[in-house]
Length: 280
Image (cartoon, rainbow, N blue to C red; front, side, top):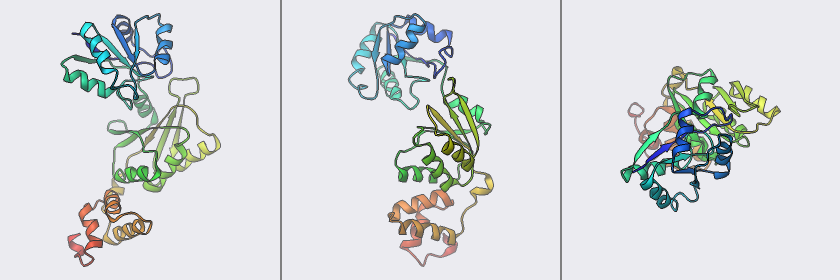
Protein backbone atom coordinates (compact mmCIF):
# COMPACT_ATOMS: atom_id res chain seq x y z
CA UNK A 1 0.00 0.00 0.00
CA UNK A 2 1.22 3.46 -0.87
CA UNK A 3 1.29 6.66 1.12
CA UNK A 4 -0.55 9.88 0.39
CA UNK A 5 1.97 12.69 0.78
CA UNK A 6 0.63 16.19 1.36
CA UNK A 7 3.23 18.33 -0.38
CA UNK A 8 3.35 22.14 0.05
CA UNK A 9 4.50 24.02 -3.03
CA UNK A 10 5.80 27.62 -3.41
CA UNK A 11 3.29 30.46 -3.16
CA UNK A 12 5.38 32.61 -5.49
CA UNK A 13 9.14 32.19 -5.39
CA UNK A 14 10.00 28.76 -6.83
CA UNK A 15 13.00 28.49 -4.51
CA UNK A 16 10.64 28.11 -1.54
CA UNK A 17 10.36 24.33 -1.73
CA UNK A 18 12.11 21.79 0.47
CA UNK A 19 14.55 19.13 -0.68
CA UNK A 20 12.25 16.52 0.80
CA UNK A 21 9.28 17.83 -1.19
CA UNK A 22 11.28 17.61 -4.41
CA UNK A 23 12.30 14.02 -3.62
CA UNK A 24 8.70 13.00 -2.91
CA UNK A 25 7.48 14.59 -6.15
CA UNK A 26 10.15 12.71 -8.10
CA UNK A 27 9.55 9.33 -6.45
CA UNK A 28 5.73 9.31 -6.30
CA UNK A 29 3.78 7.14 -8.71
CA UNK A 30 1.29 9.96 -9.27
CA UNK A 31 0.85 13.64 -8.45
CA UNK A 32 -2.73 14.80 -7.79
CA UNK A 33 -2.75 18.52 -8.59
CA UNK A 34 -5.40 21.20 -8.13
CA UNK A 35 -4.36 22.69 -11.50
CA UNK A 36 -2.07 20.56 -13.65
CA UNK A 37 -1.00 23.60 -15.70
CA UNK A 38 0.29 25.41 -12.62
CA UNK A 39 2.01 22.29 -11.27
CA UNK A 40 3.70 21.58 -14.62
CA UNK A 41 5.51 24.92 -14.35
CA UNK A 42 7.02 23.80 -11.05
CA UNK A 43 7.84 20.30 -12.32
CA UNK A 44 9.53 21.60 -15.47
CA UNK A 45 11.58 24.01 -13.38
CA UNK A 46 12.97 21.10 -11.34
CA UNK A 47 13.02 18.57 -14.21
CA UNK A 48 10.44 16.25 -12.64
CA UNK A 49 8.49 13.92 -14.96
CA UNK A 50 6.09 12.18 -12.54
CA UNK A 51 2.62 11.58 -14.07
CA UNK A 52 -0.05 14.13 -13.19
CA UNK A 53 -3.78 13.94 -12.64
CA UNK A 54 -6.15 16.77 -11.73
CA UNK A 55 -7.90 16.87 -8.38
CA UNK A 56 -9.97 19.97 -7.69
CA UNK A 57 -13.31 21.22 -6.40
CA UNK A 58 -15.26 20.18 -9.50
CA UNK A 59 -13.94 16.62 -9.94
CA UNK A 60 -13.00 15.62 -6.40
CA UNK A 61 -15.61 12.85 -6.23
CA UNK A 62 -15.02 11.32 -9.66
CA UNK A 63 -11.25 11.22 -9.14
CA UNK A 64 -11.25 9.21 -5.93
CA UNK A 65 -11.19 5.77 -7.60
CA UNK A 66 -8.22 6.69 -9.80
CA UNK A 67 -6.28 7.98 -6.80
CA UNK A 68 -7.04 4.88 -4.74
CA UNK A 69 -5.94 2.67 -7.65
CA UNK A 70 -2.66 4.58 -7.71
CA UNK A 71 -2.23 4.23 -3.95
CA UNK A 72 -2.67 0.48 -4.27
CA UNK A 73 0.42 0.47 -6.48
CA UNK A 74 2.58 3.21 -4.97
CA UNK A 75 2.73 6.67 -3.41
CA UNK A 76 0.61 9.68 -4.41
CA UNK A 77 1.62 13.30 -3.84
CA UNK A 78 -1.19 15.81 -3.31
CA UNK A 79 -0.40 19.41 -4.28
CA UNK A 80 -2.49 22.57 -4.60
CA UNK A 81 -1.92 25.58 -6.85
CA UNK A 82 0.30 27.09 -4.16
CA UNK A 83 1.01 26.55 -0.48
CA UNK A 84 -0.14 23.68 1.71
CA UNK A 85 -2.96 21.44 0.39
CA UNK A 86 -6.09 21.33 2.52
CA UNK A 87 -6.00 25.00 3.48
CA UNK A 88 -8.99 26.65 1.75
CA UNK A 89 -9.11 23.98 -0.97
CA UNK A 90 -10.74 20.51 -1.31
CA UNK A 91 -7.64 18.59 -0.18
CA UNK A 92 -8.94 17.77 3.30
CA UNK A 93 -11.74 15.65 1.83
CA UNK A 94 -9.25 13.44 0.02
CA UNK A 95 -7.23 13.11 3.22
CA UNK A 96 -10.36 11.98 5.08
CA UNK A 97 -11.20 9.40 2.43
CA UNK A 98 -7.65 8.04 2.36
CA UNK A 99 -7.58 7.70 6.16
CA UNK A 100 -10.93 5.89 6.13
CA UNK A 101 -9.57 3.32 3.66
CA UNK A 102 -6.56 2.61 5.81
CA UNK A 103 -3.81 4.24 3.77
CA UNK A 104 -0.99 6.17 5.40
CA UNK A 105 -1.08 9.98 5.18
CA UNK A 106 2.18 11.88 5.58
CA UNK A 107 2.06 15.71 5.59
CA UNK A 108 5.23 17.62 4.73
CA UNK A 109 5.98 21.03 6.27
CA UNK A 110 6.49 23.86 3.84
CA UNK A 111 5.21 27.04 2.22
CA UNK A 112 1.91 28.73 3.05
CA UNK A 113 0.65 32.31 3.02
CA UNK A 114 -0.91 32.28 6.49
CA UNK A 115 2.17 32.10 8.71
CA UNK A 116 4.45 34.55 6.85
CA UNK A 117 1.64 37.12 6.88
CA UNK A 118 1.01 36.59 10.58
CA UNK A 119 4.61 36.82 11.75
CA UNK A 120 5.33 39.75 9.42
CA UNK A 121 2.27 41.72 10.52
CA UNK A 122 3.72 42.88 13.81
CA UNK A 123 0.55 41.71 15.59
CA UNK A 124 0.58 39.05 18.34
CA UNK A 125 1.31 35.64 16.85
CA UNK A 126 1.32 33.48 19.98
CA UNK A 127 -2.42 32.79 19.57
CA UNK A 128 -4.54 33.37 16.49
CA UNK A 129 -7.74 32.31 14.71
CA UNK A 130 -7.64 31.46 10.99
CA UNK A 131 -10.93 32.26 9.25
CA UNK A 132 -10.18 31.13 5.71
CA UNK A 133 -12.11 33.32 3.27
CA UNK A 134 -14.82 35.54 4.77
CA UNK A 135 -18.34 35.21 3.31
CA UNK A 136 -18.88 37.10 0.06
CA UNK A 137 -22.32 38.42 1.00
CA UNK A 138 -22.28 41.53 3.18
CA UNK A 139 -24.85 40.31 5.70
CA UNK A 140 -23.18 36.94 6.26
CA UNK A 141 -19.80 38.65 6.57
CA UNK A 142 -21.12 41.15 9.11
CA UNK A 143 -22.73 38.38 11.14
CA UNK A 144 -19.49 36.40 11.27
CA UNK A 145 -17.53 39.47 12.33
CA UNK A 146 -20.14 40.24 15.01
CA UNK A 147 -19.64 36.75 16.43
CA UNK A 148 -15.91 37.54 16.73
CA UNK A 149 -16.21 41.02 18.22
CA UNK A 150 -14.95 39.87 21.63
CA UNK A 151 -12.24 37.55 20.29
CA UNK A 152 -8.95 38.66 21.83
CA UNK A 153 -6.72 36.48 19.64
CA UNK A 154 -5.34 37.81 16.35
CA UNK A 155 -7.59 37.05 13.38
CA UNK A 156 -6.25 35.99 9.97
CA UNK A 157 -8.25 35.71 6.77
CA UNK A 158 -7.65 35.39 3.05
CA UNK A 159 -9.27 38.02 0.84
CA UNK A 160 -9.56 38.92 -2.81
CA UNK A 161 -8.39 42.37 -3.97
CA UNK A 162 -11.80 43.37 -5.31
CA UNK A 163 -13.44 42.75 -1.89
CA UNK A 164 -10.68 44.12 0.34
CA UNK A 165 -12.10 47.62 0.84
CA UNK A 166 -15.60 46.30 1.56
CA UNK A 167 -14.16 43.89 4.10
CA UNK A 168 -12.13 46.61 5.80
CA UNK A 169 -15.24 48.80 5.96
CA UNK A 170 -17.18 45.94 7.56
CA UNK A 171 -14.39 45.40 10.08
CA UNK A 172 -14.41 49.06 11.04
CA UNK A 173 -18.19 49.06 11.41
CA UNK A 174 -18.25 46.00 13.68
CA UNK A 175 -14.89 46.21 15.49
CA UNK A 176 -14.10 49.91 15.36
CA UNK A 177 -10.51 51.04 14.80
CA UNK A 178 -8.43 47.91 15.17
CA UNK A 179 -4.82 47.52 14.02
CA UNK A 180 -4.67 45.55 10.79
CA UNK A 181 -2.07 44.42 8.28
CA UNK A 182 -2.53 43.57 4.62
CA UNK A 183 0.13 41.17 3.38
CA UNK A 184 0.01 41.17 -0.41
CA UNK A 185 1.79 39.07 -3.05
CA UNK A 186 3.93 37.24 -0.51
CA UNK A 187 7.31 35.97 -1.82
CA UNK A 188 6.66 37.61 -5.20
CA UNK A 189 8.30 40.62 -6.85
CA UNK A 190 5.69 43.10 -5.59
CA UNK A 191 5.39 41.76 -2.04
CA UNK A 192 4.20 44.36 0.44
CA UNK A 193 2.99 44.75 4.00
CA UNK A 194 0.67 47.65 4.75
CA UNK A 195 0.14 48.13 8.48
CA UNK A 196 -1.96 50.61 10.44
CA UNK A 197 -5.45 51.26 11.71
CA UNK A 198 -8.39 50.08 9.61
CA UNK A 199 -8.98 53.63 8.36
CA UNK A 200 -5.32 54.15 7.48
CA UNK A 201 -5.15 50.93 5.49
CA UNK A 202 -8.46 51.75 3.78
CA UNK A 203 -7.07 55.15 2.76
CA UNK A 204 -3.97 53.53 1.31
CA UNK A 205 -5.89 51.06 -0.83
CA UNK A 206 -8.44 53.64 -1.89
CA UNK A 207 -5.54 55.60 -3.38
CA UNK A 208 -3.71 52.46 -4.56
CA UNK A 209 -6.21 49.77 -5.64
CA UNK A 210 -4.88 46.37 -4.54
CA UNK A 211 -3.94 43.51 -6.82
CA UNK A 212 -2.84 39.93 -6.34
CA UNK A 213 -3.10 37.49 -3.45
CA UNK A 214 -3.98 39.00 -0.07
CA UNK A 215 -3.81 37.87 3.54
CA UNK A 216 -5.53 40.18 6.03
CA UNK A 217 -4.38 40.12 9.67
CA UNK A 218 -6.63 41.78 12.26
CA UNK A 219 -5.73 42.67 15.83
CA UNK A 220 -7.84 41.01 18.51
CA UNK A 221 -10.16 42.80 20.88
CA UNK A 222 -8.52 44.59 23.78
CA UNK A 223 -9.59 43.15 27.17
CA UNK A 224 -11.30 46.44 28.05
CA UNK A 225 -13.48 46.13 24.92
CA UNK A 226 -14.90 42.77 25.97
CA UNK A 227 -16.92 44.09 28.92
CA UNK A 228 -20.53 42.95 29.09
CA UNK A 229 -22.97 45.51 27.74
CA UNK A 230 -25.62 46.99 30.00
CA UNK A 231 -29.27 46.30 29.23
CA UNK A 232 -30.01 49.68 27.63
CA UNK A 233 -27.21 49.15 25.12
CA UNK A 234 -28.42 45.64 24.32
CA UNK A 235 -32.00 46.84 23.83
CA UNK A 236 -30.84 49.64 21.53
CA UNK A 237 -28.71 47.31 19.40
CA UNK A 238 -31.51 44.75 19.19
CA UNK A 239 -34.08 47.38 18.19
CA UNK A 240 -31.77 48.76 15.52
CA UNK A 241 -31.41 45.34 13.91
CA UNK A 242 -35.13 44.61 14.09
CA UNK A 243 -35.96 47.96 12.52
CA UNK A 244 -33.54 47.10 9.71
CA UNK A 245 -35.66 44.04 8.93
CA UNK A 246 -33.77 41.22 10.65
CA UNK A 247 -35.70 38.40 12.28
CA UNK A 248 -35.73 38.35 16.09
CA UNK A 249 -33.82 35.08 16.19
CA UNK A 250 -31.10 36.35 13.86
CA UNK A 251 -30.84 39.73 15.58
CA UNK A 252 -30.67 38.18 19.05
CA UNK A 253 -27.84 35.88 17.99
CA UNK A 254 -25.82 38.75 16.52
CA UNK A 255 -26.34 41.07 19.50
CA UNK A 256 -25.46 38.29 21.93
CA UNK A 257 -22.16 37.72 20.13
CA UNK A 258 -21.27 41.41 20.47
CA UNK A 259 -22.58 42.11 23.96
CA UNK A 260 -21.46 39.19 26.08
CA UNK A 261 -25.08 38.31 26.83
CA UNK A 262 -26.66 34.90 26.46
CA UNK A 263 -28.72 34.67 23.25
CA UNK A 264 -31.82 33.52 25.12
CA UNK A 265 -31.65 36.53 27.42
CA UNK A 266 -31.38 38.90 24.46
CA UNK A 267 -34.31 37.13 22.79
CA UNK A 268 -36.36 37.42 25.97
CA UNK A 269 -36.05 41.21 25.98
CA UNK A 270 -38.62 41.21 23.15
CA UNK A 271 -40.63 38.11 23.91
CA UNK A 272 -40.88 38.91 27.62
CA UNK A 273 -40.71 42.72 28.00
CA UNK A 274 -41.30 42.50 31.75
CA UNK A 275 -38.24 40.34 32.28
CA UNK A 276 -36.43 41.47 35.42
CA UNK A 277 -33.29 43.38 34.52
CA UNK A 278 -31.36 41.58 37.22
CA UNK A 279 -32.12 38.25 35.55
CA UNK A 280 -30.87 39.41 32.14
